Image 1 (cartoon, rainbow, N blue to C red):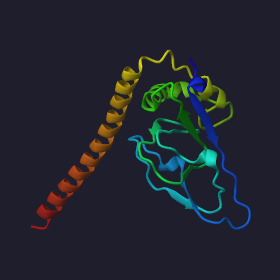
Image 2: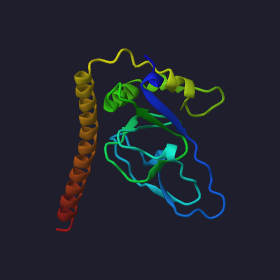
Image 3: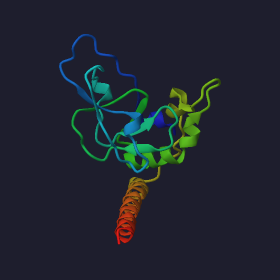
Length: 181
C-alpha cells in the first residue's frame, strides 16, 4: 500500500504577501523542527500569505523536504500555525494511526531522500513520498502500540538531552566552585 492511499500529502510553498497583510502569521520553519519531536522558535512573518492548506493540524506529520533526517508528529493542538517553505505535511486519514505512519516514515527516511543530479542536498520528491510503500498496515491496536513506542523513543531522546544539559551545568558549577577556593 502506498502512502497516498492513507494520507493527504501537501508540499508547502506559501506565496509572498502582496501589499500590507492584515497580520503576521506564525510559521513552523525547517529550522524549528528537532529530532526529539519538539518545535522550537516559531517565526512570525507578515510577508508570507497564510493559506488554509498549510495550517498545521493536530496529528499532522511534518517532514523537511530538503535533507530530511527525521519526522515530527504534531501532538499538541496549536492554534493558527502554518507550515513554511520546503516542508511536507502528511495528513493521515482514518485508515491508519498517524503515529504509526510517522514511525514508518522515519524508519524509511533514507528511502524518501533521493539524490538529484547536480544538487548539493538530498531532497524528498513528490513521487518518492506519494509512492512510499507502507506495506499492509497491521490491526489498529498494533498500530497504536507501535506509534506510542515511537513517540516514547522521541520523548526519551528529549529527556536524555535535557539530563545531559543539566549534568553539564552541575559539573560546571562544581568546577567553578572548586576553582574559586
